[in-house]
Length: 265
Image (tube, rainbow, N blue to C red; front, side, top):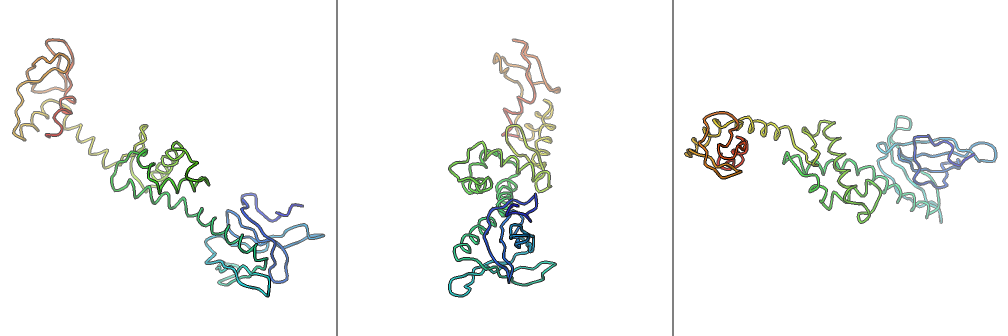
């Protein structure tokens, strides 16, 4: 039988050490779910029986304490439905205690990384309402978090991996309702508020009459337009959203006229 009997199929083992709890020999195992103590069981002590389990939310603290002259205890402070609020001691060698506590701290850091990544992306783009995700991806602190998320060092992770992760996280935040808006094919995030403003803007300037009215309110009166194709002088139309140049038959669109004067509107 495997030494990992007692580990559930959905648990990934990160570290394990030989240890004892009271009079029981076994293993203390760090998984992606929490801490498991597997008690030795079966003939010849080859099997493992699941004896204790604490998920990360139940663990309030973990430390190493001296036991006798050469041994150490790993003290696990926790509160769980089965054991209440108490501390359990698992005996092991001093080096095993150092290694296990180091692995536990590292795993805690990985567990917090997705939440920290989401929080930073929200801080970078939510106040603006619109953001270039490529620019967001260049943030050094965010890049470090994403590298940790992928269990890579910062120098090894590629720009494409960082950008893809940022895009995936933003999509997830939109799905959760933490962000309200859309992702574009150009890797931009645009909030619904910005989208609404842009929609109103284009609705206002959809025809020549509305452009003329807005410019007139600014004290500007247009009498003619210049054809962008041939530079011919055209009489400014009173309505409609496009006119045909009488010199070169090019179509002049109201929205193009608006773009030319948008800083004045």
